Image (cartoon, rainbow, N blue to C red):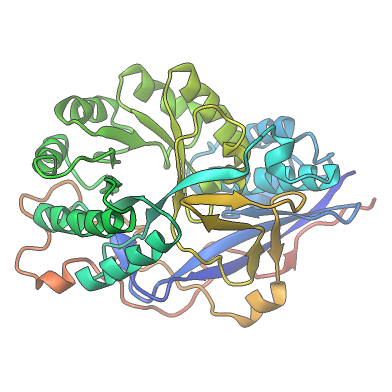
Length: 414
């Protein structure tokens, strides 16, 4: 079997409501979802969800190779980005291709990826994560009531701009999940997406902990600030979780060495091989691991095979437009199916007929605000309570770093 080419597509996740974090909000709830499809000479196609930045250069590392040599090809892709570096969306492109290769390998074996990787239990524990900073209190309650119907008993709130609002909204989620769990105390987490200084983080979390018990605080300060993360960890009761934006094991090492992280996270778009390696590194230091991302399908399969998986993030309960996935959610867990590979089917006609993804405006969650980490008072001071968040205005559609949908980039004769 040989790799013969790839195609890039872009679909959208349609939330039907505002979604975002302390950095910004997609007001229309339409979030771009880039996809890479890898073709082989035997007709098996693999799917990876992630960007396609520098993909021509990266694809050259695997062009014409046997896709079943996945981990070796992963390292070849890293070597092909040696000079410029493999950080950011380039690392995401490697991850998307890597996930597609794992999909092909499992399909060729006629097994779901979770079984090929050595998993025994197809159930993957989950927590609810609504990207909910743009919701009113009533909308927040309604969203978590829906999560609760699927058995979710742990939840992560997006916050960091107004400590009183965060505390109030965490209590709302607690009450929803407590009622659904017939009085059992739920798990609560807070994610501020690197919005604070070290002292702000300790002060704000300590204030919340007077009322609530947090499982973890996520990215309280900048992702690379090992000393700062360790300082925060020493000043609060909650665990410190980080890692979704770290691109390579070398970026985890200083954090682990400094005792700066209690829960290792990896992003869904970084790929299966990275997750497996980060899991092994975390396990060597007796740390749990937790995948981040909306329907991190590849990492859900991989999570069944590692001994230190804690829980996986469940964002939208529906897949992106044009994708069907062989999994469902029940009793607070993802339940993986028996389809060979990842169990993802891509309907390119539906994607082509759907909404076009929008450009990233300056106040979207993907752009760090100018005053992030330098606010003396809450961002929401003087703003009506029901509109205490930055809202991204809709902008004209654009392709934004993606190739035209369905473009075939390279074909190698079998």
